Image (cartoon, rainbow, N blue to C red; front, side):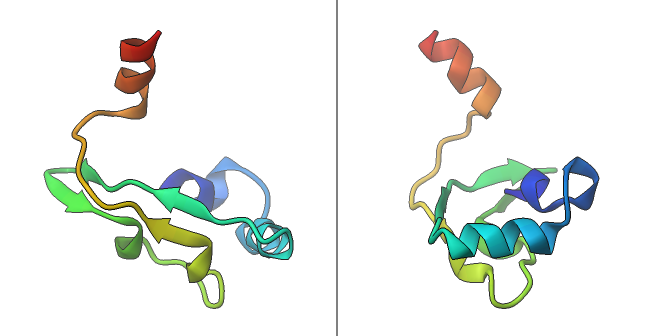
Length: 73
């Protein structure tokens, strides 16, 4: 989620979020530890009115997406 909202990684953030909202997309976002601090999607600033595109998943799994892909391959 953080990377998707970072303007260095792609097109205009607001254009992308507007398009996603127009398509009624939502993202279920798992929290993760960042620099020793547990963060959820509510800790990442999202401009109004796009905050509802991202919904937190409950629970905690201390594994990166890369580690998860390798574990299931």
